[in-house]
Image 1 (cartoon, rainbow, N blue to C red):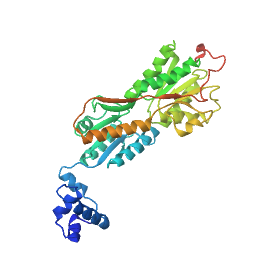
Image 2: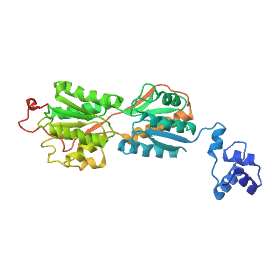
Image 3: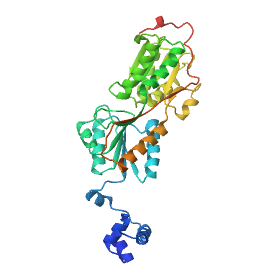
Image 4: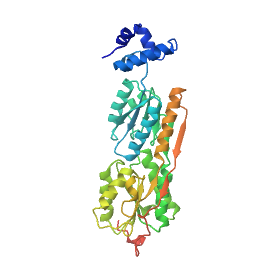
Length: 345
């Protein structure tokens, strides 16, 4: 391994001068810095980050802690964050929790031990107390989900309004038996989306009983599959389904492909998110789209600003992005002859 002493010997400089040149110390002339950097590049020198951290310096790494990289929300966010961090001289380190708070804790311990500059986190439903303590020592932002024990700086979407829009569209189409497939209320996003669904029913003059709910893991494609099987087993009941996550939407769409149910003639569907394939699935999926790339960019810039100016400042800040209902061919009025009285259970 090439060391600063090797560079110093090659250039006839002291080790301390080489170290200061690599650290961009203003006491070193620009000419010397150029010679040192050129030699370091030619010789394949890699900075010893562990030694820097032992001296109390933080790294240029930002941790991203998310539940599931397979979810396009998170993969898109990770991609955009990575590009923005790279432009500012930072590197993104990805950690996946699979909604397990003990896995979340292990990742946070590693990030803390490596003295990351900051953390962007989509927290689990109940972060461990030690996770909360660790995050209090690291500049961090919450993304999509907001837990009251963590930073009051948050970037997310208007979950309530997104589901209200999606459900109101079905109510306006004349549906009176609508099923919501979403995440658990223990998650703040799950609670907000469920309330948005119920708000649309109330605004449409429908009783809460008009809305069936199938709640489960939001990142589980299998939960979406199982939920639609139960819904179809109860026909004639729900004439429409509104989804509360991208993965659940994928599960429902995959399951429907295996049935003889016609969309929207037999069943109307409103998805969550706007995957590239949604526009050409069947008749085209009506769905709620979100400005994920813009949100990720804003999140990155906010954290960079916080690290550059006041890293210990945790003033309350919230950036809320709105969803847009994209109407395609998967929604239509309910099947003729269907009435609310036909609900079987």
